[in-house]
Length: 363
Ligand code: ARG
Image 1: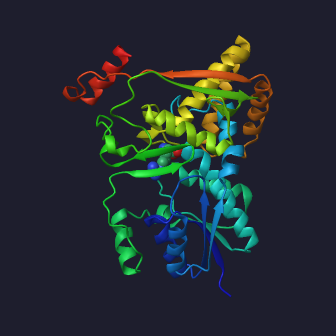
Image 2 (image 1 turned 90 degrees about the vertical axis):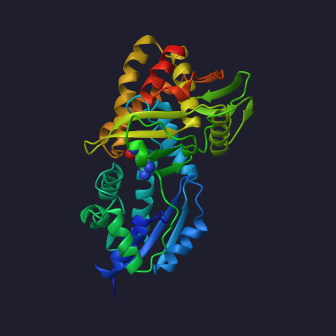
Image 3 (image 1 turned 180 degrees about the horizontal axis):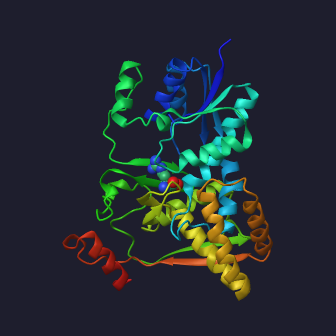
């Protein structure tokens, strides 16, 4: 009997190539796993694609609630912003996805774990670390290990009848309930301004004239109600994503230090995360002592670094969680945020660098 490999499958080019590669080169049956973390992809289509590529079995796992409870909520309590900016949307989801792959591998008695990450990003580290901490099975990562370029992958796809999405991809996008990351393409040049149509959650034009308010109620560090309405957690985050996004809030544009030592320009739209973390940080200022606040700022930064690196199993992570949870017992209350529409001055006549400076001066 052939061995089985379990692969985290997104439906994109990389992971589709990996299916064929595992079948052809490793002579393995492939079981694919797609984890729903609120990315709003068409899961039926992804499952049909996996099946058309000859997988033995495909799993769609709805992990949205677990994503919120076990990853987003701890991040809120830690005011988690990597390098003071990035709310860790992709970083928080990867260990959960990898964990689900390990669970399926155990259940299916598999002989290998696989992923389709490249050798340049953080995700390879997050997958490897989580796979390794939950299983002793060999890890197969062909895109990274063979250093496959997009062109080589496209040729391989053609040869193996892998359906290719021909719409030109200007950026690489990763999306889940906590945020949307847009990277690559023209935006690799840190001086180039992201085009308006790169954003789908945050409105960049014709913003409301009047100040908009958003009230977030927290209990023990966790958001439980918005604008006076108690909501379930997934619904609450979606509500803030929508409302803050419609008010132009939540674009983050910064230079990020990747785990592997590369600096990269990263653009995100994270309206919900931006508002919730801002409100949570402010509420802590009301209820924690100045000594707690000073110390917690260091703990929060360290927590964010560990989460960015996928080090959820490091004992330091749970040590920090214990301290953070102890502080959250008093973090209950309501925070009111207000968004004033801001007119940007002569945006067209300025280069992006100048434009940033203008923003600093005029805000
Ligand atoms: N730099 C971020 C991270 O490592 C986001 C990566 C998003 N990935 C993407 N393909 N756009 O967490």
